[in-house]
Structures are given as structure tokens and as C-alpha cells.
Length: 376
Image (cartoon, rainbow, N blue to C red; front, side):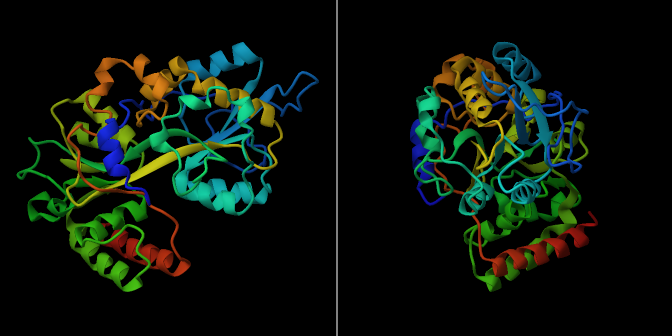
């Protein structure tokens, strides 16, 4: 990120919290656009609201972002039915929102970089914070970032870093950074996520470069380095890669924070590594689309989630860093020891941001070649 967030994070102990991008089911799911999304259940017809306000909230985000009991409680307390619609990638979300011209969906939760694009395209409404009296509960560490520098459009909902987790009984070396993943002793023993900017970014970081370099020659050089890593890669997947580490299918993995949480809860003997070369840091934000059909319901849901006890419940389920300062007092102690950056963390953090089309194309090319080389 453009701000020197690392020092702030270290000073503030990066809000112990999170919750695991868990395995629970979420509410009924009808995509208002009529297209096929990754949904977890069939649904009912869309409500058009009534004189006292909307009776439906169309929530658009990844699968399993909220405990079912929180969704149920919101419905019971407000009379607003949650129509939970899933997307698989941020890019899928943006395409749907563009096609709907900022309509169809009432509340979206997505990653920072894609929100920046959605705001630039006029697809996000400026928040009326008079309808969010609990907005002050948000930890300021997660505000004022590149995608919404004046906090006009978004409310943070979870944050995290990309880290390495490994089983010391399943590898022959001590891993301290990304560069160690290239060690020949790790042949066919590593799992990584499928976010190509994050994974290509490992090579850039080893080279001492930025995740967000626009230099195509540097990106191509990182591609050569990634090809050298290919023999060590056994798996490339986003979903539940922690299970492969826990089961012994792989000895080391590059994971998202939520997956680290689940892995450490299952096996505290695993080792978490904050790479010496620097780590990627990201924030998920809630926003209301510019033509949301039930924006009043969206405000009510955001305010509901900002309640400290509800927020703690969500973060313990979700597995990411807590973005709600007031929730910290309600988070169970068992999570706090490994669900935040360590107190002595002094490394660099950097947020992955949008880059030029030419640089993005170079990343896509080297990632395709890398995938082919790994056989994934």
C-alpha cells in the first residue's frame, strides 16, 4: 500500500481477530441478473419492498463470508430476507455489476483493487454515514487506503496477508522467506493459491521489486524465476488448500490469512512464516452499488455487522484480521495468538494495486507458462 502500513501495524499489533472463511452454508441465493452464479441454494422471487422499507437484501460476495446464525438473526431482527448471491472471482463480480449498471445488487463485498475500479466506473454510491452510527467502530488502520482514500464509499470487512505455512516434520529446511521455496529439497511439496498477481509477486519480491511494477521486462524476468520454481509446486488452488497441508499432501503452502487460521487451529505445530522479502496486504470492503434496489436494507445490514459482538462472531468465523476495533474485546483468546501479525513484526507490507493493461498482460502470460510447467 502507498502508506507505510507496516509500521502502523506493528505499533497497533494489527488488531487480533478474524474468523475463518469457513465451511458453513449461507442463505437463499437468487442472482437478480438471471445468470448462473456459484450459489448455495435455490431461491424465491425478489421482493420490491414496502412502505416501511425493503424486505430483501441482495448480498453479493464470495461463498461463506458470514456465519449462518448471523444472517438468520439479521432476518429475525429486521424482517429483511437475505438473498445471498456468490461470485467466484472479483473480476466476475465487476463484470456482473457493469452489466447491471450498478443495479441488481444491494451490498457487495470484494477486494480492494477491484473496488477502486468499480468506484472509477461510477458503480459505487457514496455512503450516507448518518445511517451508520457505528462506523466509528472501524479500526482506522484499515481506512484511508488507495482504493478509497477518503473513506467515502466503503466499510472494511476483513483484512489479511499472504504468508507461508509449513510442517517442520515434512520439509528438510527451515523456511524464512519466499526465496526458500526455490530449494530443490521441496520438489513437488508446495501448494500455492491461484491469484497470479500474488504468486508472480513472490518472484518479484525475491528480486527486490514491487508487486505493482509497470516494467514489463522486470515482470518477464520474474516469469523466468517462476519457471525455476515450477518443479517444487504440487498444487495450485484457492479453496481449502490448508486441508492439503494438514493431511500431509504437501509440506508447505502459501496461504491467505483465513486458511492460515484454519490450519493453525487444526495443527498448532505448523510454522507460520512472514517472508523476509515483504508480504502482500489486502482489505475486503463492503460497498453499496450506485443503483442498488434496496439500499436502505444495505445500510441496515452494514450497521448490524458493525455491532461489536456481531463483528467478533463474524471475524472468528471468517478467519481474517478484524477491522472492527470495538469487536476485539469480544474475540475469544484462542484466536488472538496467531490471528494477527506478531508484535515483533518489522517487515514491509505492500498492497497489490491495479496496473497498466500491458503489465497485466505480461503477468497473465508468465502465469500461463508457469501453470503449464507445473502441470496444474
